[in-house]
Image (cartoon, rainbow, N blue to C red; front, side, top):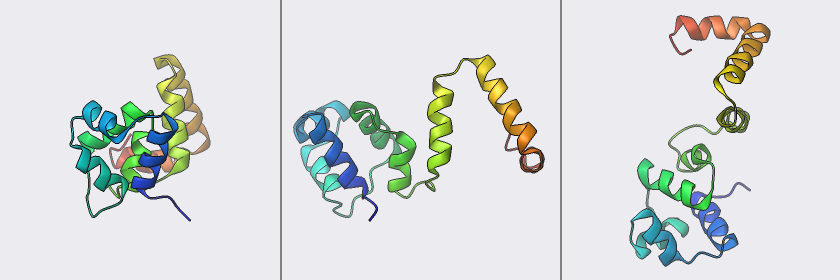
Length: 116
């Protein structure tokens, strides 16, 4: 069964030995808001709050967005994004060239839609 946003945040916070109060202070929200998020109490954190939580708890921001139903979750894309963050510009261009070489039809369609 897939984990909820609250479960992921709560589990990670506990792994890092942070209290709800520490998390709340770090991301500038109330303790009760942290509790409601962790308990999936009919609350939808805004993207800025999710980003702050992701950074503080060292979680993947896009994964939290997907759990919060803000974007579709595509684990393969998250892997590529994490790898790209560690690359310099030359490596990013090389990766894009490799992808274009192997998936030229898809890239041509994306470029026509001005997505790339």
